[in-house]
Image (cartoon, helix red, strand yellow):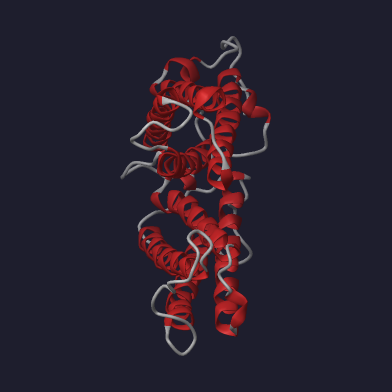
Length: 311
């Protein structure tokens, strides 16, 4: 994407616009959270490591996005910048939401810990800043989202495009539960469910990558928007089958236990992991079904049509 002769080297829209303000808030909240956690709030265990990794990852990528947008260096990248940024904003929103729930749940107590009340106060501040960071990322998604009646150029800015990010995130939660002692290898039917989750995740990731990398021209014998609908329809059918098969082979008395065993350890109970997989299987089925219904209402303009740069 070329620059107009005589245009300023810095993109004023990235600095002075509402979108620029949202990104500056993201960086400010991310910096505040990381500083307070490392200074006094602290973290430990797998839950704390996840929260810290999410905050650090979001801060690093958001800083890179802000720098590239402000200096217009994104024009050197062979990607669809609008699709990339809205995809990242949606992903970061989900990561911040999760961290904003997990951190206070595991580290915040009403009474002062043995380290003192200062630590508790810092943890409250971390939670507040994390929630504000969530709102800042959500604001970017809202600002970039395609409005009704607009010609859709960036697929990831549409409701189906944003749903693709949520579907992939939910699939990652399912994979985490499967890896946490879910005993999915006991039956061929539950192995089939794992194959369904992996296949649908791969298809979703493929659509997102094709969109971000500007590979949205005709796919073999069909246009890209039809290819997406075909993939989504297949995913709906697969998730429907998995949402039925998984609970039967995990909670029916013939194959498993309908009730949580009393001897099951807290945090490392296979039954808990099976419940998480069952719940989020139904959640993802609903997301794919909603995606399919919305996909019938949009017409995607191929990447051959140039996108206007935000200035």
